Amino acid sequence: MKRLAGLLVCTCVLTAHADGVDDLIVKLMREHQITGLSLAIVEDGKTVKTQGYGFADKGSKTPVTTHTLFQAGSISKPVAAMGALRLVEQGRLSLDADVNGTLRSWRVPENEFTKEKSVTLRGILSHSAGLTVHGFPGYSADSSVPSLVQVLDGAKPANTPPIRVDLVPGSRLRYSGGGYVVAQQMMIDVTGQRFPQFMEERVLKPLGMTNSTYEQPLPSDFASKAATGYYADGHAVQGRWHIYPEMAPAGLWTTATDLARFEIGIQQAVSGKSNPVISQSMARQMLTKQKDNAGLGVFLQEVNKNLVFMHNGQDEGFYAEIVACANTGKGAVVMTNANQDSGVCKQIIEAIIKEYHWW
Image 1 (spheres, rainbow, N blue to C red):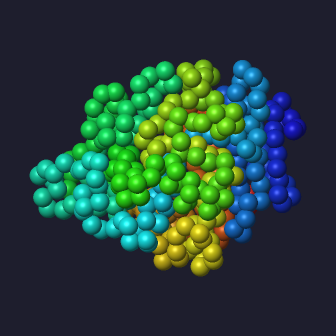
Image 2: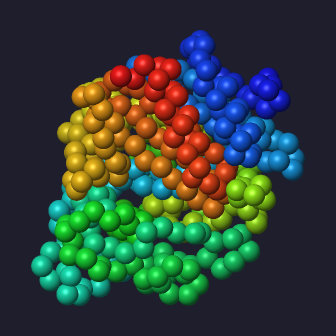
């Protein structure tokens, strides 16, 4: 433990690298009243720096460490997408078949928009399936939590509308967390497993993401390591965080270090090195633009001939961003227990890109 300009910092620097990122983080956290932040930096396909700043919980003065869990919000999606792509490679799911051929517990209601084209897993993972519901607010710890089918149908006690097709599938990109709920149900139906169990066995553990879980509510052994979520005004989320039965789009609890392992897993797969979850060809499909800038589970950008994959995420009381280069082995993860998209994570990542000479 050390203090930087009055801010408590827990550091695990795997490769010594003097940089100005720390000072910027301290400055931005103070300016934006961010309680806690966790950082991971990847160089040459290896995690070279992990660091915690501030507090996981203000009341108890619990510091953020490299093992502190944060809600990943929509960064749950690319990790869940890798699970779906594993099933595609096993022949248990299809990227291009009608999803109703796989779904058992629930089916996408047919309507005028599905007459021309069917909803496919490829469309779901690339936000081009024509499905509704952008995102999910979650459920407070003392409220009733709906089943997944109730979420799909918008039935009480679900707090979001029914997930339905209201655009011709494949016609355009429109972000849909609702589509990933459909993908979650597909994975449950085809494996016969609970979604958190499948993801733990087939994605998280193989990638070494041992401080991560999709379990909702959060089990006590993980809860003891979890950060409390905070609003922009500094008040804590009631019950410390919300519960997300919409696990695939919003339910991942993880650390910056584990998300760095996820980035490295994609980089290794793309380069042809060992990846225990998906093959090189599937990883390349994942990082191929399907519609506009959307790949399968991630968003893509080319910068100075470098293919960059990225995603951000926001749950009640939390905000995070991941960015990585597919072909250079560079990456960054920033996670906060602050319910604000104030540009802080983006500024930190831009500083890392400059300091570590990404291009």
